Length: 116
Image (cartoon, rainbow, N blue to C red; front, side, top):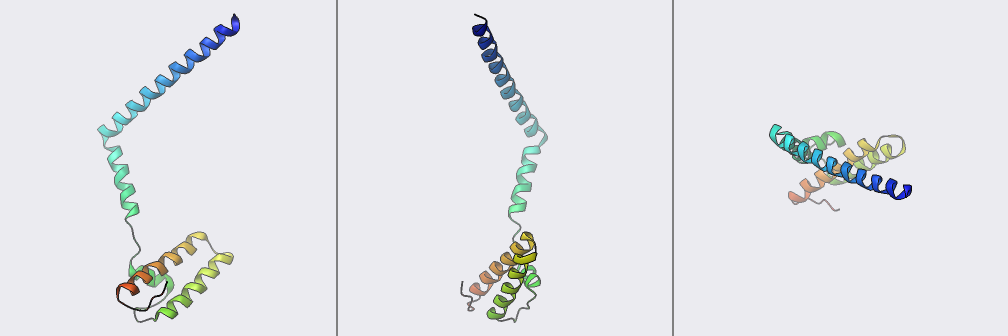
């Protein structure tokens, strides 16, 4: 009999906590929409996602100029990528990779010889 009462208390207590959690979540959403916090968070997410690397930034990262041949860009990329693989950081390695991708798109757009 005591086990049945204890089980009922646990089930009822869980239900009460679940309803309270749902109510608190709804209230938090309502407050966020009133304050504009939800829109601000969404705009920040969109702004971060839209920050693409510019051609100038890519050239600075790889240390090349506008007149540099694609083969030279690949050599610089390989050197920098390998250097950061061995004893560099993943962040720098990803920046080097993104720079190469950016310049690859630029060279393909100009009709240059930028094989993948």
